[in-house]
Every structure is written in structure tokens, then in C-alpha cells.
Amino acid sequence: MHIENDDIEIVKQLIGGSERAFDALYHKYGRSAFLIALRYCGANKEEAQDAVQEVFAKLWERRGKLKAEPPISYLLFTMVKNAAINKYEKRNNALRRNGRYIEVEPQEYIPETNSRELVEELHRAIEKISAPATRQVLKMYYVDGKSYQEIVEITGMKLQTARKFVSQGVAFVRKVFKNPY
Picture 1 (cartoon, rainbow, N blue to C red):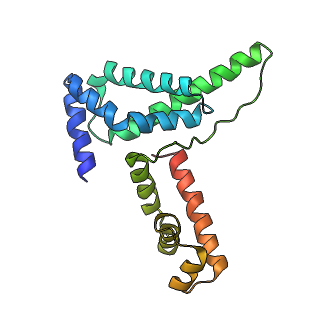
Picture 2 (picture 1 turned 90 degrees about the vertical axis):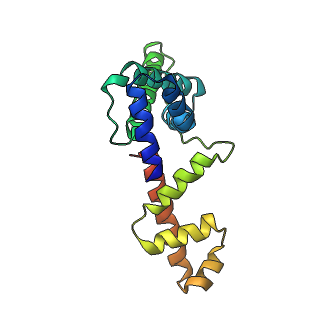
């Protein structure tokens, strides 16, 4: 895959201390990392930004220990998720100690714009659906903008079946976005 080959080269340069490679990594994954952090920080933008900055700082500090494989995105997104969860728990623990605790659940953040990266991630998640009919119906509904009635006419399946496939597909995509690795 071309994207992974680019990542391998970036990581090799990063291991060698290339600031340009570090910048390339940040520009490539910074927004996605922020969206992941935001999801696990209870939609707290400041904490999400802090989590991403901390993770990229750790990557730079530990660049000599990095490996070109598996893809750097797996490591990066895992680190971001963990840093965000830690910030979320630390905030809630502090509120508990101060007697001002209000449970705030991590939320899914829906970005204001459909960035190209996010759309690509969505398409990759859809492609991971193992059931071909579910994948096809989900693409027809969300990507092609077909109505349930149009899907029924095209595929010949029952309306309830089409709805079930969309529901199953959405559930799968949500799981992938909650744990992208």
C-alpha cells in the first residue's frame, strides 16, 4: 500500500532525527489524532489539544526507539487515545476530590467540516465490513445517497432487511472509529 510505504520512509527519517519528517507526520496525522483525543476527552478541546501535543512530543523524544513497522498511525492513535483517557480521568478525579463531580461521558465529536482524511477513514472502515451485502447497502445509503426504497428496488431485498444492513454497518463503523487499530 502506498500510504504505508510513505509512512515507513517518514519513520525512518524521523528515527534519524529529521525535523522535516516529524513535521510531515504531524501534518499527516495531527487532525485525526485531535479528533480521536476529542472523543475520549469528553469533547474538551483544550485537553484534546494537550493530549495530541504530549503524544507528538513523546514521539520526538523517543524517535530512536521507533520501528518502521507496524504502521506509525497505529502507535500514534493508541498513544493519543491513552493520553486522552488519562486526561479525562484526571479531570474527573480532581472534580471528585473537590466535591464538584459531575459525570461527563466521553462523546463522539462530529467535526464541522468533512476533511478528506476523515472521509478516507470512513471509506476504509466501510471496506472492513466482512459481509458483502451489508457493505454494499451501507455504501448505497451513505455514500451514494440512495433512499431505502431505492435500495430495495435495486437489490430486490425487503425494506426491513435493508434497514437491518444499514444498522449493522453503522454499528461496525462506530466500533472501528472507537478503536481504529
